[in-house]
Image (tube, rainbow, N blue to C red; front, top):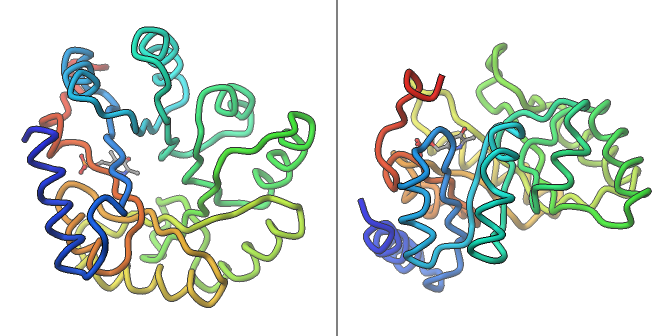
Length: 220
Ligand SMILES: *Cc1c(COP(=O)(O)O)cnc(C)c1O
């Protein structure tokens, strides 16, 4: 689907929800995609992209930024503390702050740098053992702990379980955000971004619907 078609669907979802068209940030998730597809979306004028691996992003985006100018990059995958410096050099927004140890290292690093990416805390609303994110019952405490470390948390992020109705998870994320005074919600992917917008998403992360299916075999 073209960028224009996705934007049209997004605008309709915004309007249907009584929200201003253009108020939701579309993050084009370019992980694993052939560079020609990424360029096509850049050529169409889009400048907000998401990657889930620091290493992959480091091999791709410095050159593309040189060529296309400023691109806002969102880290939407797990962050290891040993990749923190590299991630801070590359990304404008982190969506996956999810544990105290990472919070402490991040707080030290941003203090030294004097600047901080925009921060989202990932919440594991489905309480899936294999998935990253703080548990819903621990979210309030973790948000408070981040604030105590002067980390400027602006929102929450969720990846709902694949086999469950995502709306329940979007609604839970929103509730946790509201009771903690957080205004931004990173939720909704190719298959459910319209539902996420209906429930208050401010950032949707769309990959395959925009770029086509990911070929992991080829990418290695
Ligand atoms: C890959 C990925 C997406 C995009 O998924 P699609 O279903 O291809 O839109 C969104 N969010 C995260 C965290 C991802 O890893």
